[in-house]
Amino acid sequence: MTVATNVRFSPWIWFRFDTQENNPPTFRVAEGVELVHPILAGRPGMPGLTDDEHQEWLWRVDRICYVPARQLVFLSDEHLSPDTADPIIYNLCRKLRLLARQPWLPPQIQSTGHLSDEQSAPDVSGVNVLDYFPPPLESPIYGVRRGHVECAATLEHLELALRMPDDFDFPAYAEFMLDACYAFDTRDYRRTILYTAIAVEAVATETLTQAYNEVVADPARRPEFRVREITDREGTRRADPIYRMLSRGNNWRTLVHELPLYLFGRSLQLDEPALYEQLNALQNTRNAIAHGNRPDASQNSLPITGEAALDAVARAKDAFRWFGKDTRYPLDPSDTVSLTANGVGEDLF
Image (tube, rainbow, N blue to C red; front, side):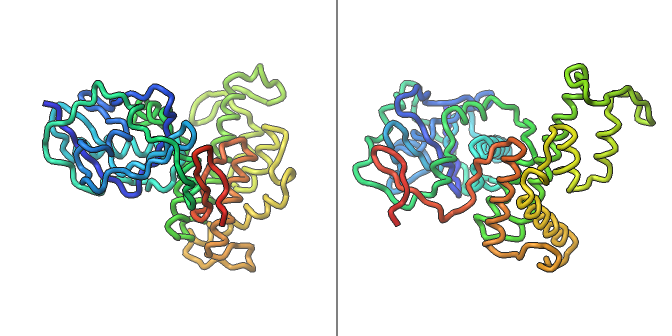
């Protein structure tokens, strides 16, 4: 007997599916465990939702259908205990959070309801998913959060998440940036500023480290660097002594001036001096918070307010842009759009 296990979520996971693509009814999650397509998980006949809870927020815009999933349904050969299900849920949500940039999925998301009792699952093996997509909207929908629309997980995100190993090493800066956006969403402005500062330092460090490792791995491609065989107490290895000297001390300003100037021939301090000063204020605020002090405007720090936190996320996105990274992180819950049968537009209010 196939068993259906229902997992309830709060907040919901947002998906968007192309109604003209091939949408399989199930996806393999683990040995003997399959995930039911999110649009089928909210349909009558599936466990977990009462008759008046079945998904009604299915918005079709042209050929795209937006699905806010309040539950996921897993099919397995035997009942999934919480010890088995929780790691599956956590790892899937973590990967979807990072792939689609959905910060409202908390960093430590878990199921908010109880797993369903063991029961026979409906047969979805022969179901045509395309039959479950609704017709295009008959009237406009206003006040939909822009982030929910722009960062909804796609079929490609879902399939990629299920193929990725659970210990996949996502960039630290992406996780910190999502944590900052989530903190802002929950009005935790101190944590927002702290995480944005960490994200900026992490994106600089990881970008520079990757570029430096590429230089050291193949010095013939970049003969302008001074890569040598260096022996110290850690052994013998290739290194550029000038880069090593510049990177000593883990100085924030070096990360955005001397090191990128040496590696890339450009400096954030020289390219965008106003942004450089704003990021300095952000790092000063981080240091004050980390040492238990109250940020002081006289010391070029930011106040712990919603306006300052929102600006901190925006400046961090500017830093991501300068380092050539994705800046698609939703940061303002009040930024909404309208949905019509033909597309996504600006709200009329």
